[in-house]
Image (cartoon, rainbow, N blue to C red; front, side, top):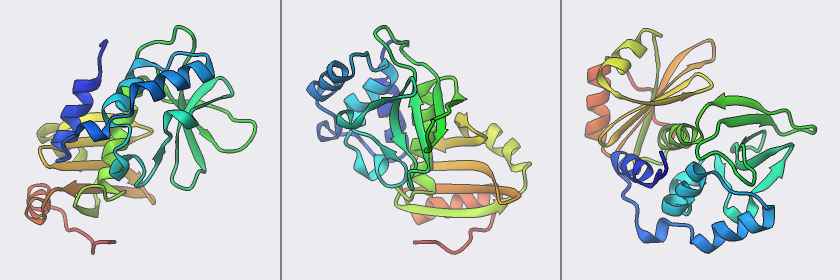
Length: 216
């Protein structure tokens, strides 16, 4: 794929967040970052900035997408996202002739950084992180969680649109709904988001789960 902007726009719309011109990072900021770092930001990452770089209700609500002015090269990777407590960092490959959609990498925030691949496409990493922000981060208007059986994955794979997997975290969606399915505290758990309480009830009924009390 040479252009990822429509992919990101469609995903945000599925999550109930229509993008506006104010959500874009100005092209000049992307160009300035490339000149400062003397590298080409991979197209998959640059296109996310071009359509959603200023969507603070997703990009900053949990893990933090760095603005182009804060991008940096660390131990051979382009650092572009920090975990919400800055314990974990995420980066990607970048150089003078970087690939359009290189892998995403993770490192514990302690010198020296040791990067490990967490996904073979930066675009998929960004999409999964959107769903993590939507559900656990609470970017969607309604958010709930429930302990589940591992076999629930079969129902999700069958009836929901699979977005991608990063480090065992699987993201799914339907219009106005999002789910992250992950191993959690020696068990399995879903984190769900929706645009209405009615939809949250529908998710619970369809998947036969019982939501725990809301955390916010």
